[in-house]
Image (cartoon, rainbow, N blue to C red; front, top):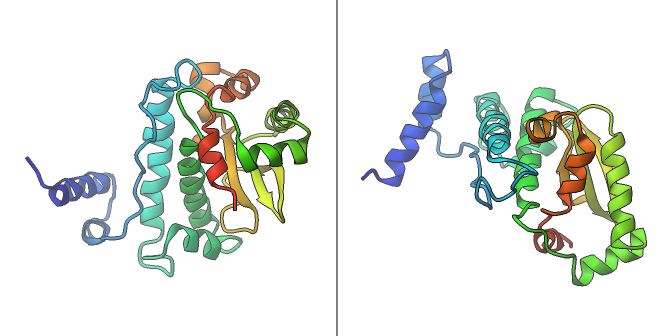
Length: 225
Ligand SMILES: [Fe+2]
């Protein structure tokens, strides 16, 4: 049986296989601070027909993994090397589009997986009170969130954020993210086509509708400050 460090070395060597530069590979293999694809907080088939294991294979296993892989290459040998994800996002915003997009997409996807569960719970306590206070009711909130998610043009993300003591629904284009801003992220839905096209084709509305059956409200509530 291999030790964890041997497994890690193999992982890094596989990671480098597509790189054209032997020097880059060498540097990456020796790095101890690479960004890593997080474990999914649920089993691959936990989301049923809403997001099939095939979608997980592509969305998590290809798209998210690809952002992580490219991010590790993009920060190599520059000011971002060795920084935390939060530092990279803050430092690259409006300054280095490539690094920002990769770092923000790593954050956005990691956050998104944590928002999901096999079965949805219900908002409770402070979160439930804030939803009622700022949107009228949970149903009103879902309607407003759904309208924004459905009408969002092109690729992006819809979020509930907490800002200045209030909850707000925001949509962000492409990789843009509340990470590194004053808006505290609580919940997000990925509305890039890669999130739903295998299971729902072009029916983003069905994807949004099914989302509510898989929101991990307990985890969302824990993000409030
Ligand atoms: Fe995505």
